[in-house]
Image 1 (cartoon, one colour):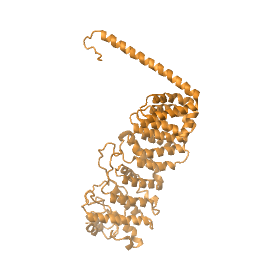
Image 2 (cartoon, helix red, strand yellow; image 1 turned 45 degrees about the horizontal axis):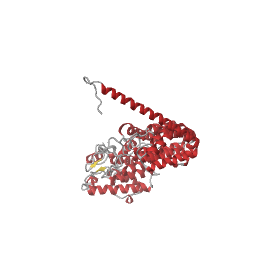
Image 3 (tube, one colour; image 1 turned 90 degrees about the vertical axis):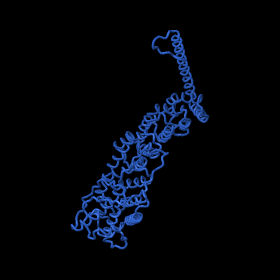
Image 4 (cartoon, one colour; image 1 turned 180 degrees about the horizontal axis):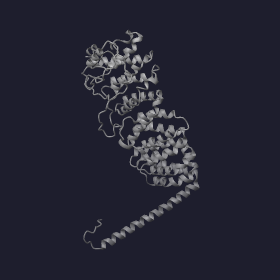
Length: 491
């Protein structure tokens, strides 16, 4: 079928129109075969050639070079290789239905071999890419990659560990297109000043939409490509950061469904590494308004490593941000999700390992109140993880210097854990920490112990008084006759 199509290609070279740089809606269906650019109007060249290109309904006339696309690059003179490159790119704009492996097998193989040739040609890096070639490659990538994903009805939008990833049946061809785009952007033969006209905001926005793909292989390719674009096109950096921020905002505050949050955070991790000091206010706002709220979604386990890396990058660059992050963690601390509590405690330990004394003192009161709640958690992993904080020498040193404030806060939790926790391992760990505090400051420990006993006595007495008051009310109510719709207390 492709040979019949190719036989109709005009043999006369047509002048490319570089002004036509908008992508339009390239989310074409995958009916076999569908030719990208079918509705394009021919530009340039003779009217006869335009008629032939239009009647063949194969490629946009602005991309037809007049060379047989199946000719190998080695059989063409160097001066004509760029024209052949454009012709082969046009050939790869033909779309196929990959849901049925039995359809158009030979034609799919021709397209695959052509893509392999293009990848090898770009990888050689022997010729500078002309503007028509840049336009042709961007269009070919747009037609093959930019598409609308089917609705995802699974809970969590692909962010659950239990969900099996869905693989695109057209991946063998998509992978080659992604590899071609990556090598093209990375090539030293690409002039960024020319390419930025076609790899523009619209192109980048469509690339970012593809991060919602459920295929992890596709997201990995997109991650590498976007990272290269960010590095090569400095003019697009603010737009890329803003667009990724918008994806995060939508994920946190609206949908909580997106498959590529981890990959986008990984990109930002390398971006944060390059931030100059002192940090701009824009970057601090990103930390507080984006990274900290990303702790809120229940699917945090999927992207936690990347999120934690980004947060730690900020703290290492500007240590005083540690207290801001800890306040954010306390704000979004999970109330009913024990696994998230374990994750939060792990991140808390990472931050406390690098926090300085001044920042620690700013947040130690609410922090250790929360740690005390975790120690008394009935979920033994939460209680155990909280007690493991005392295995860190730097944290113990911070606690020792501020024991006058911390021990009165944490002592009731330790005493209740020793007296009533069901898990022996938690009880043993609590005993060790009590012993550590006793050796640290025996006088303070005894004071806290006595004060706690006094408070417990007061609370017990108050509870007994309430209980006795209810008994008297119940007795008085039982002596009065029931009339009308009066409520009756049933024992």
